[in-house]
Length: 293
Length: 235
Image (cartoon, rainbow over all chains, first blue to last red; front, side):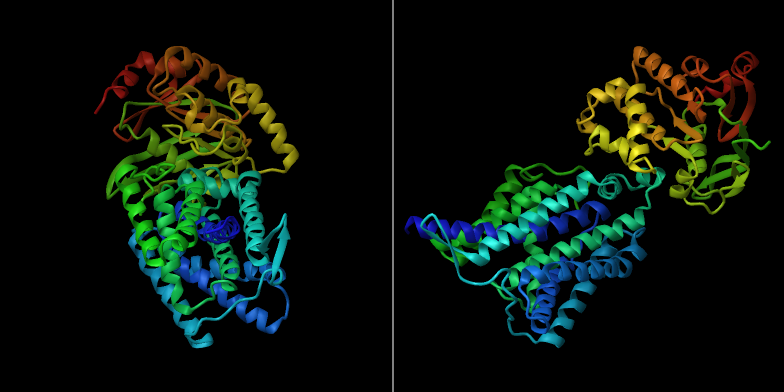
């Protein structure tokens, strides 16, 4: 394997990892805010992918222009998800939310199947096809655009959570909802907004993945599993850990798979997961106490 | 003129068993009063009831003469009640500055001013403004919890065992900070077992025992009457 191919592989892995990082980030934000797992999260990525396909069919615009539209519409879907599947059950045991989100996921999956069919569909390229020439290297334009877009989204989410009163109140709600409530925070609203943010991140990840990897109604389950693995590897409840875990999964799926094979790389990833569970049960960054669901 | 806080016949029950029973008390504007009693006397539950964190089985609570019945905790906070719980409950994963900022319901300029005031009152917090709250010592966390409550610019401050687990030197420091915060500030209701510490702050107080308010008076009256000694006995 020559150096150019390796660079291209690493670029692909980074692009895939960046998209997975958006998925895992939204997943962990909801875990932290609710103490429960949103099993519809992978299906939200799928929904974002199909929304991108539909929008690109109706509006012949590049993905980068459609991205904020997808994010806004998916945020509304996240609000609806929280209203239907979380807020009425918030005082019940977490298993109620597991079941309700699984139900919503199945509805999204079947809805996509009914509207778009089971065949894979390709989403819009983010900023055109072709290659970028950089110092003698021909870099895939789509991969580079996905990395830049995901980096901007990750940075924007970080800024929202750390530099705005809204973000601080979302984090306070996630850490101690009763105390946040006693400080005047409308915690139900913060949780609903967290669902909205998570769905927006999932939907934009769906758009970013839909061009290169296509989108099918049934892919939500595997994306959900990847998000779960990313969070377990990185550290349950750790935002940074989820991002690290996402990039690790992408590394296996892109680079390790190219050296070995896709099935072997997947087996190796699960072997790493088991090793992490044995050696460092709390994940790479350690588990946030009392959050495991 | 109506009191800042008035409790009339408040009863709180967990699983049908009353934890606080028929408790009545009043707190005047800018008054500092103590709620004294042993562990399990019902002090913490009474403060939680004022904050709206536990439902009332019977009775009514008034703030500024207006009933708080049906008012959720977040709305009570916005109406001027600030609560410092036992065990501090600072947001450990957030910085000191973020812990303070999150409690300020005002525009950015007022928030900065209140932050300056909090850092003036608690200089140790200013030095640690970028540190995660879980890295602070117990005394510093207590100051952060009080500072966070003051960021709400409350008219009523509820302090639940603010001296619990603090070394004597830190107790004196926290007493001094609370005294400074009380000057021209909110009315303060302090639930405590540490009589000496609270006597330095509150001229008047109530004794609680087995969920009931058993005596009311100046702290010296409570101490001399023997009611306090009885209240501070464990169940």
